[in-house]
Amino acid sequence: MIKLGLIGDNIAKSQSPRLHRLAGLQNGAKVSYDRLVPAESGKDFDMLFAEVAQGGFRGVNITYPYKERAAQKVQIDDPLVRAIGAVNTVIFDAGGPHGFNTDYSGFIAAYRHIRGNTAPGVALMIGAGGVGKAVAYGLAAMGITEIRIAERDLPKAEALAEALRAAKPALRVVTGPDAAALAQGAEGLINCTPVGMVGYGGTPLPRASMTGALWAFDAVYTPVDTQFLNDAAAQGLQIISGYELFIGQGVDAWRLFTDLPLNDDRLRADLLQPE
Image (cartoon, rainbow, N blue to C red; front, side):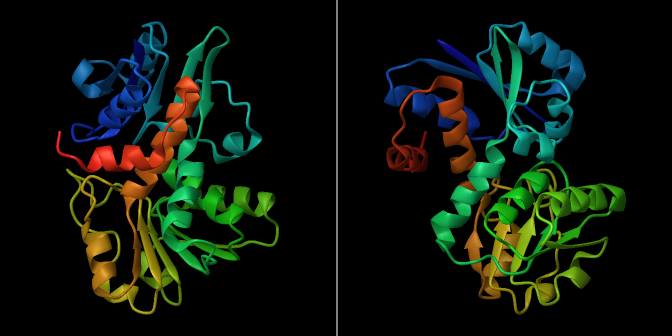
């Protein structure tokens, strides 16, 4: 039995348990994958993480809003992940908990799956939290020339901007609190906030502010058809759904957890079948 789990808030509809169980079926392996919500367990994140670390789990995924807190509790060997400062995948082994970020690699895979080698152009990213950091570094790795970060918590946005400038000195990074203002002239529009997720209705950017953009990505995947993406599609933008990120990060996490092979196309097809 491969014992896995997901720590986060508002994860009742997460498809991560199903993804990893289907990955197990491809390999004839039994997988348990628990949803672990701190508030529902009566424990805070620190207590729950400590309990899981001693509870026989091979590893856990971490989602909103705990990715940055998790990074403080694990050994991170990859300097890029240390720079991101957020982890979404933790492995427990004899050396203690080790942290990884498959949001970073998953976003690049999601972008390439839909847009191929087309350059991102100037992009607006709304939200500078854990997934925002991973997406920003993914954009930087793809050679983006300008990132605009819209974030109400300006110190958080500027901290990310400084880290990006240090990693890529030629990269132009602009920050501000007003997503609509920063959207003017942007080719890519990216939501890295929970707005639009089940339990967090709405959209982080008015439809009228999408005029002139070419593509949009939403890190939210429950539901897949968020208002943000529906509005973008109505404006004629090319859409990259959070489901693509979900697949990419999940595939990479599975390989970290188990080092077992995985047929990505079969996994996609299986996930589309009714349970």
